[in-house]
Structures are given as C-alpha cells and as structure tokens.
Image (cartoon, rainbow, N blue to C red; front, side, top):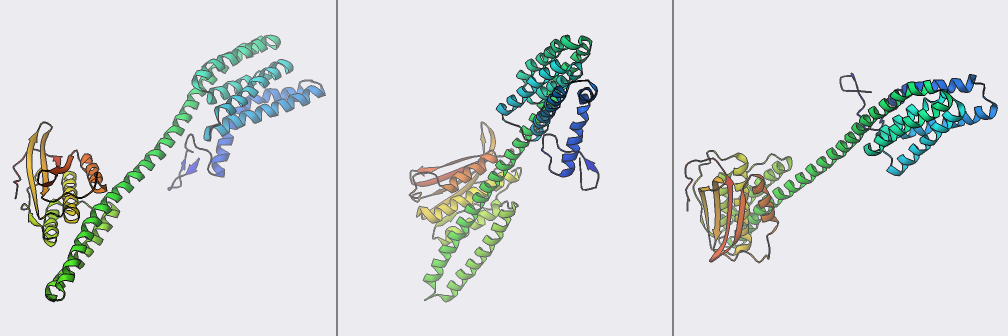
Length: 393
C-alpha cells in the first residue's frame, strides 16, 4: 500500500511491480501469509525422526521449492515471464511436490496446495484447467502411499484454491493488458495532437507568410514613387505578423477556433493585395451551425485563398456560401472558385490533406479539382435546417 495526497493509505495497483520498498514489503507479507502450509513440512524436518541424509535432502528440496514458488508467483504478478520460463518453473514445482511428499510422508502433502496456486495463477486458462485437477489427482495418489485421509481432506482445497487463482491470474493479466492499452491510447493521443499542431501551423503560417510576402513586394515597388503607400503596406505587414504570432500561440495551446466572418474579411485583404478581383459574400448567418463546423469551414476558406494567392496565378476569385438540402441532411457549403491554373502539383498537398481530416472530424466533406476555366474547392459541413445564407457574389 502507498499513501495518496491526503496522507491516507491506498492500495498498490494490481498487476504492477513494487515501485517502493513499502510496496515490496507489503507484497512480500501478503504472499508470506500463504506460506502457513509449510509449517507441517518444517515441523516434520525437525521432529520427524528422519535420518541426516533425508533431513538435508528434504531441507534443500523445500528451499528450492519455496524459492521457485516465490519467484514464479511473486515476480510473474508484476513482470510476467515468458511462457517457456513459466512452464520450466512450473515443471520444477510439479516434480518436487510429489517427490518430497512421497519420500518424506503425508506432512508434505501441503506442497500440492502451492503447486495448484502456482499453476492456477501463471498458466494459461486452458492449460490450468487440466493442470489443477492433475495436481489434485497426483496428491491423492501420493497420499494413498502415506495417509489417504489427509489426502482426501486436502483434495477439495487443492482444486478450489487452484481454480480461484485462475481468476486472480486472469485479473492480473487483464490489468496488465489494460495498462499497456492505456499507454497505447496516450501515445495515439499525443500523435493526434502533433498532427493537429502541424495542421494548424501549416494553415496559419502559410496564409500569413504569403500575405507578408505579397505586401513586402508591394511596398518595395511603391517605395521609390509612393512612400506614403509603401508605409501603409509596411504597417499592414506589422499587423499581419503580430496577428500571426497571436494565432500561433493560440494554436499551440489548443484554444484557437477561427471564425468564418474573420476569415472572409482576411480573404478580401489577401486577394486584393495579390491583385486578384475578389467576390466575397457579406457576413454570413451562421445560425444553427456548430462551432466545430464553422471552424472547419474557416480553415477551408483560409487554405483555399492561400492556394489562390500563392499557386494559381488567378485574376479573379469568387467565394460563395450556400445552405443546401442533401440526402444526408442539410449542409452549409463553401465554394471557392478561381480562373487560375490550380498550381503545378500532381496530387493533393499537405494543406488539402489536413483540411480533409478537419472536415471529416466535423462530419463534412471536401471536393477540390480543376474545372473548365480554373480551379474549384467545395467544402460542406452538416448543419440544422435554417434560412438561406446567400451566395454573396
């Protein structure tokens, strides 16, 4: 047992190896209590009238039996042995118990109790169901040689405690497996968090750095002839960089949920700065739209506009928001279409891949590809029935 934060004792977790000296002592005492059945063999060695050779051989055999038993049961509870080691140690006990009981008398029949416990706690269930009755039968046959009444009295105990220990062994194994599963879940959660952070940083920095690059180029071209306009572009660059820093900090802490209205305004600025004629809808009505769905559409808009600015070479871009009724229910649809080339990539980039994952988590879908006169990205998220948002274009 250990102590919790309040100073009250708490039980050592089942299936864990001892982590402190106190836990080691508690588990040793718990197992030591069950060594009471060894009192009969010890008393027989002291007062049984055996010869010197028999006493020495019996003492050595008993010491080996107890050592193997404690190693098998005590060690296997926290850090299980391999099946080969379990079978080897269990076989040693299976040999020592009948040999000692047969040669030294009925006082040693109690060793079969420990044999049954060891096999029940460590062997697989199918093997234990055969091994426990076999140990009881072997004890009874050995008892016929020395004391049938004693053997008959222990017969039920050997079977009962052996099958009881199969439940304990199964509980320990299940606890160990659950502990491993919990560690696996924690690792998967950590991997998912890293993927989330990677997606956020890609979307945030890709958009912001593209805008900073565009405005820097504009400021450079305006500087000789229009220093006042260049100064305005530099001020915009400072504002964008500050906002990007805030967004990155929020993304790292996991609290950032972009808003669709803010992204629409940002899209207008980015497209205008790139010299693209933008058709952006007014602030949309997002009634009955879940926050997660709105966030997914906002990310989709940001990624789409970033790709238009950086890769498409487009001169015109239209953004539309519509509510539609589909076979799967009402959806809010975001469509971003431009007249550019759509970039030179041969497959979906990291941005579209991460965007697809975001929309799938919100129950939505993503379609992106070339159309007759440009490139189109369509993102849909489920929503409750409501009024039309309007195209805005």
